[in-house]
Structure formats: structure tokens, C-alpha cells
Length: 378
Image (tube, rainbow, N blue to C red; front, side, top):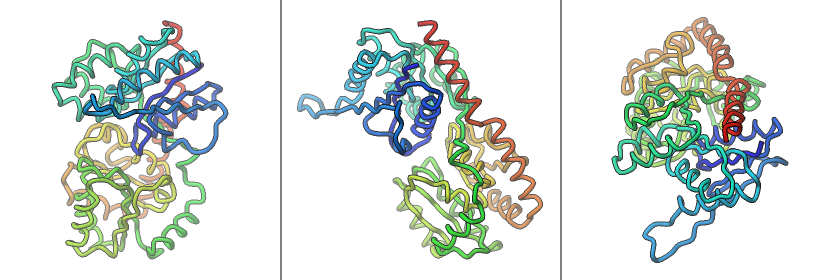
């Protein structure tokens, strides 16, 4: 198959899954054509059957804003025709699904269109009445629409009310990258490089530092934890909340125990170093970082927002708390960090569950089957 893929190339769950899925499809012998504003950040290395077609957007005085969506649609049409694509996979309803539909209509071929909803296109943009018809159009005019969690699927049905079935296909974890190989060696090296004592427990968070990630509550929970357990907090990522988070860290007087390591192209070693991973988002359609950390052995404490509840089985593979409940998050963390038997039992159950429900082979196969069925119908 010749598969076109459009996604946001920057750091984020949707771009990661789009890229990892494309790489796995290329390993199965399919030809992949990315159509995006730049090379996806997770596309590391050279692949003989993966191509990137960048969208060049010019400035025109007549336009108040640069016409990304129209230019993208034109590029999609061009790539469909030049490379005889069979199907295009659009990650995000707007602008990507709408641009894909327009690009397909502009092309000389009729290709299948798959749209995957990742979260922000529904949970944030879906509240904008001016965008609701465009989101609905993108969903209804795709051959198949998928969502990354049942929670997101239900939110889409409730908010957008599309006349279209939506399939749930969970995100998956790249087991070749996120695993427990050389765990103790990596853990020791990373602690040494960050100036963390070898006997200190490590709590980890990784995100794009938007307000919706609720990082302040994580810092406040850690403030409670470090009073009774020797521990350090590692925060990976960058974004608009970095300033307020840093201010809170200094206000609480824990700057010597909190490590702001910035945006990382590869967070695997950080996950392996950590004992716990916290994701206390206000909204979260899935939580891919959570899944990646879990497969590296880091036991999660997550909020009861969106798809997080579908990733963590409360009391079995981690703990779920209310979004702003720093006391409950701290209590569960202390319990795990001071009870080795509980920690190891939960960790073992967690790793088995992640591989059983979110293994790449099974989920990639689901997408491949969808591609084939859509091509057959078209």
C-alpha cells in the first residue's frame, strides 16, 4: 500500500503516534508519504520507503493569516497524484481531515480517507461553535474515523453529534524503544548525571507544559511526598507553564529537589530512572507519555480525566485520583515508595497489562486492516 500521513510534526502524542504507526507500516513493506509543515520530530533515522513532503506556506498581503489549510490541501492533492497513493491518514479532524477531503477532491484519484481524533480537536476546539460544523464535516466525510479512547469517542458523540460511527483504537507503545533493558545501569547513570543521590526515589512528569497538564498540582503533591520519603522530582518538557511552575518550586523551597530538564527528544532514559510517573491532567484523551513510562517500569499516578482511566487500572496497575487532589496523589506515592512488596507486585501486573492491551503488533494490525478495507471500498 501507498499511504499518505498528515500530522502535526511537533512534540505531542498525536505526532508521536502518527510517526510510530507510519514507521511500523513501513516495516511491513508499505510506502509512507508524510505531508506536513516539517519533518516529524520522532522520525529519527533513514527509511528507504518513508518520504516527507513539506508544505511551504507563503505570506500574501491580501491574507491576514498564512493559508496553511488550503496550501496543505493542494499539497495533499499533488502527492496523491504524483505518487499514486491508495489511502491517506489524517491525524486531527481540523484542519487535517478537512484539508485531506479537499485535497482528495482536487486530485485525479479517489483515495480512502482515515481520520484519527486525538483529543484537542474535540475537547478544546469542539467547544468553539464556529468550528463545530467543520469538525463534523471532517468526521462524516472520512471513510473511517477512529478515536484514541472510549472517553474521547463519547465526548465527540456528545459534543459534535456526527452522523458517523467512530471506532476506538488505543494508542500503542513502541516496545523496542520503551522497555526495561539495562534498567539499573541507566538508572544509576541518569541519577549521577542529574546530581540525584542513588538512594533517592524519583518521581517523573513529561509534557508540553500547558496549563491543562496541571503541573502545579504535581509539584504540590511532591512537596508533601519529600517530607516523608527521600525523593526528587524530574520535570521534562517546555511550554507556557514553565515560568509559573518554576516560581512555585522556589516559593515552596524545593528547588534543590526538582529538576527541570527541558524538552527532550528522547525521554526513555528518564522514564527508566523514575520510580513513579505522575499525570494529573485536567483533560487528557489518552496520555501516551503515561503508557511509555509504564512500559519502562515506572508505576503511574494519574487523574480521573478522560482516557487516563482506560490506561490505568486503579489499585492494580497504578492509582487514579481526582484532578486537583494533591493529598491523595501524595498518599498513594508514599505508600508505593515505602512498601517494596506492593510496588513490585503492582509494577509486574502493570507491565503485563500494558503489553497485553497496548502492544504495537496488535494495534498496528488493526490500522492495517482498516487501510485495506477502505482501499477495497474505494
